[in-house]
Length: 486
Image 1 (tube, rainbow, N blue to C red):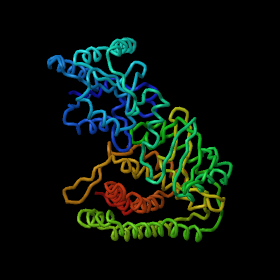
Image 2 (image 1 turned 135 degrees about the horizontal axis):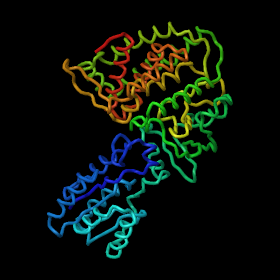
Image 3 (image 1 turned 60 degrees about the horizontal axis):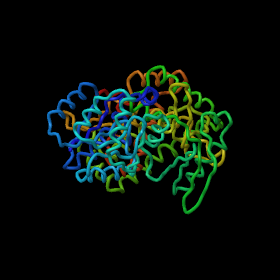
């Protein structure tokens, strides 16, 4: 039996504007493209042959192939605009296909589309029907003689912008202890980390008013059964991480993102403490956290395996060696840092925490580090910049979403390769120019960014493949800070 993933129709213009790719099969969801998600599920079934149509030529080739095959063959067709949310039920359905009594429509009709099981002849006829009205009429005719099955696999129509964004919520990687749900235009986030939820909810309500236009208001805090949650408006706006990994930004839309981000930086409240106190905060909150996290990493099985891998093939040696060199570079940055005031900080303005519309320039930060009082919200003034930098200069979102490879170089050392070379050179240049214009020292910010890549390691031991990717990024920052060209 043939399984056809029909990715021949381009996504609607409104969806392409959001995601920046032509076809649904190329959309990334949790570290894999939708076409790969479907293909992996299908090819596990020995009785199914997978085929993907992507354009008119591949469609014609498939039609030609089908017309030459035997007449009693059945074909499953899934249009790429439809996607099963419940992959387990999708797989169960695939396993039952060899026992199907005849033609079937799965999950009902979605206007002019449906997931179908049809004869070879009917499939050829359907593939030749390009006009939506004609396809709707064709499905009407075959529905009369087809078995109608329920939507246990949770098929959704991605051609609707609201459905597409609803499906893509959490498409970029999220922490394992969080969960979320959407209902009636309200997004509710919950976690067993009650203090974290209380702080995230409280942050909006304690920060200076000038900052609030950049934040998504939080409301309805609840605590029950060992968990806590709070609500926000569910905006039909993608996060910036989703856009950068799809290479959706152009110079104009990225400049708009930078405008918003640096306006946010300028809106933060500050507290003059003197340079010595800011340096103390840096040593405690930046350098001290890195040391603690690396110690914790080496107590895990994944950390010890990573350490052995880096000792043998890492460009900067094992974890202890990397930590030692990073400490020297960060200490040098702290000594050169002339910052004399703390700032009210979001604490985690990476691109996955920035909802951004490239069309209208809407910019909203979500998931702050959190605070229940204004005093608690003060932090090192460059921390937010370093967090943003680790997405733009460090390519964090590509590693975090599995869009990278670690290969062995000619010197038998690991080399990191990001999908599509990661953030493009023009984007990195635009950010560094904006940093310089704002009076920030790039070397200092990148040294603090270096600490972030090493500090995050124990937070990702549940996905060990990411760990060498983060370490190789840290090694590249060390090279840059030392002026080394590899």
